[in-house]
Amino acid sequence: MLALGAVTMMTISACSSDEKDSSPSAATEAPAADSSAVETASTPEVVEATSGSSAPTEGGSTYDEVVARGTLNCGTNGQLAGFSLNTDGVYSGFDVDYCKAIAAAVLGDPEAVTYIDLTADTRFTALQSGEIDVLIRNGTWTASRDGGLGLQWTSTTFYDGQGLLVKSDSEFQTIDDLQNTVICVQSGTTTELNLASQFAAAGIAYEPLLLTDEEAVSASFGEDACDAYTTDKSGLASFRATYPDGPDAVRILDVTLSKEPLGPAVREGDDKWFDVVNWVSFAIVQAEEFGITSENVANAATEFADSPEIIRFIGASTGDAEFASGLQLPPDFVVSVISAVGNYAEIYDRNITPLGLERGLNNLWNADVPGLLYAPPYR
Image (cartoon, rainbow, N blue to C red; front, side, top):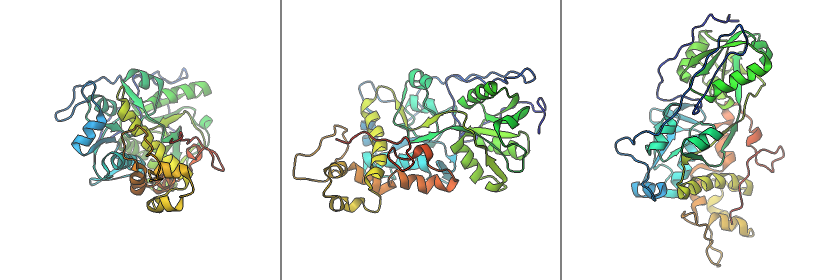
């Protein structure tokens, strides 16, 4: 075990992306008398639009700009396996599939996406300035962000929680075993505050080793500069899956330190665009509930001909007046979305299941083991 005070807190310059959350203000403090207090703060501000991009003009809509441009500018992480991983310019992952889904719905082409890798420090300002149209990158929906950044979170697409990862051969089995340890944590994030709050409540003294990205964490953790690493469990699972010594060399403790609802974010006040992004997410969930997959969606009008709800959902003709959702999306946008990326189960199984994460809270509300995924009626 590393002794407290043995490690000097350090900040390492960020790479192309940083996997953790940042908040308008975040504080980390060691809770016990023998652990020095540390406090950090980071307040994202609205920045001037970068050259070639701008937020929609007053009264305008991101939807209209995306259609006119012919491509979706989607803010992603780029370093997080299973969620958004940039491999020599080829993107894959859970979040990437949601970028593709929006492009399929709005533009009819899931490949009409420009991916922009963002760090924890740049993700919100990139959205505020109009550099990106939508942020689909691990960023927790919180009250201060919703109320203070000029942004809006749409429906949650992944219910997460902060966890702790240790070496498999270590003595640490529970959170109580981490007394007087050093914990790797990314700087400028809500994770710092969660760590401080939970360890203080448990009476656990610790020293935070502040780092800025996964590469720095991986190096520090691998060199035994810290005893444990804390971030969202999805991030820990990604870290474990790509750990240089193999996934069996590390393990995630059976403890959840926080609630971390993740999902797409858009600019506040752009209701038209908010509705589009929101209902694309809902459609992916509803498709699973209806049993519509990428394999059967093309023939869904025939296979589900006896279900008026499904016929309406896929925009098939019934001989009656065409259903008008008011979303300014094509009547059959669901077919485009599901053909491109599949339903929620398909997206999860393709990207997250290989990380070893069970669906848990990300099950449908009516599953045998119920989760929190629930889509409003499409009617």
